[in-house]
Structure formats: structure tokens, C-alpha cells
Length: 134
Image 1 (cartoon, rainbow, N blue to C red):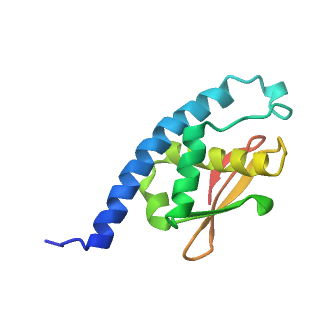
Image 2: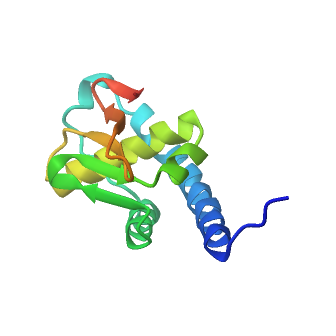
């Protein structure tokens, strides 16, 4: 039987909390996006909730996420990314796109997601084109 180190236990606890917050935040985000008419989507500004912003800030402060809004890119810890199911990945990527767009004072919501360790592009999200895992 494998024994986890303290660092691995801490990472597991952080991931569990983050995923719980992300599921709730992602569900709220998904509902808000789905409730807009397609013709209005390119012009309406979407705001992240305080909880969603806190989650992104918390992940960044813990070194699990780096968001470069000016480049519409995010670098995520691979363990955190692979712990998410497909729907959560889509919701998370949509949140990153909204975060980047709002930081740039734009309603063009798109972002590329990269593996933080390898630098490889692993997903992309755009309000116009949707979500794609690479």
C-alpha cells in the first residue's frame, strides 16, 4: 500500500475544496451563459461571482493556476486539471475566458488552457466556438 506524503495529502485536500467550489461556480456560470440569447452573447458582459473570483485568486496564490489575461491564457496544475470531469473542465475554461475578457475590458470571451508543467496547450474555450480539449 502506498503512503502519501504530507505534501500529497495537502494537495489532495486543496483539490477537493477547489473542485467543490468549482462545481458550484461552474454550474452558476453555465446557467448564466445558457440563459442568454445567442444573438446577445457577443455584446453582453458577463460578471463572475465573488466566489468564482475568490476561487481563481486562491488557486493562483497556491501556485495551482497562472492566468495571463492579456494573453488570454491560463496555466493549470496538471493534477488539478486531470481531477476534473469533462463538464467541470468546460465550466472552468469558460470562467477563465470570462476572467480574461473582463480583465481586458472586453466582451470577447476566449482563452487557451495550458499544462503548467509542460507548457502544452490542453484546451481552448470561446463563447462563439465553444469548448475543445486538445
